[in-house]
Length: 366
Image 1: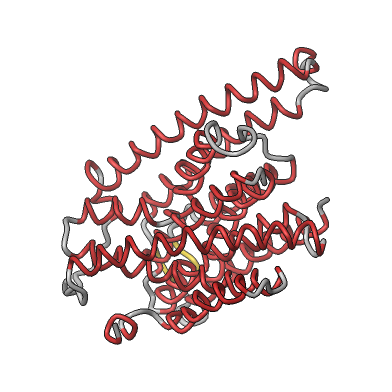
Image 2: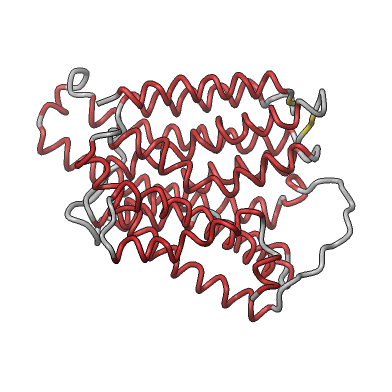
């Protein structure tokens, strides 16, 4: 166990928060204390999941490893969102989806550009891969805008003034769009991991890394950590609900867009920033964009479909106007800034500026 602990990234020291959360819950500590400690625990476990999938991938083919990382890449956000769905916190769930996309595309990638750009005047990444990823995000934007138009388009379309008809149309279109998005996601995995994987493969010839954990231990660790994440996510969401309704410190939208998204993506964000400082901008770009696409094409539609069976009512893809504008702005700046296949620190500053602008708007949004 000591060897296992020492082989984890520096966030391993936050693992103390996992048993501490259990103690705080047993003594009925204030919800804001449980919220803060459980957030640290989730962060540490996310890092452990990343390490476990990395070790398992070394025993398998690149395709299997890629599928494994794609499956568990956003498992924390998915688990947190499922528990929020069970409690009927749809606004937090939808805001966390938007927050994950904005956080990965603007905050994470922008910080990586600044961190790498301060050490290297010019960093490059694959232009073709960048174009494909941005195009996929544009498809996601279209898929999310259509339900928003249905939900808020009564002033433009007289047929949508019938609330019963609009609600039925919104529900059916959300389910249908979710199925299409999942199909596109599965085909994107075939495209990037099988038929056109050469597009996303770097030219570096690094020595293959040897696994540090036995295969059985890596698999068992992944299963145990996933169970712990499920339990801790339940505690996190319960304390989150109390934070919103009892203390009124933040709105549901801000908690979902900023707080929940940062907790769920902090571990992979630290990886992207670290590799950018090592002049591996291609890898940092793949981490950020890959997570964005996973959330938009896999996590969001899965939550819509799962909400048909769990929670007090089904969830639709009816994001509010500010959330849709934020997604549109993030995709726009990404398409303009990433088309040349190069980055520098000032591009990162622009990404961060857009993120801060929308974070402030969501902070004051009712």
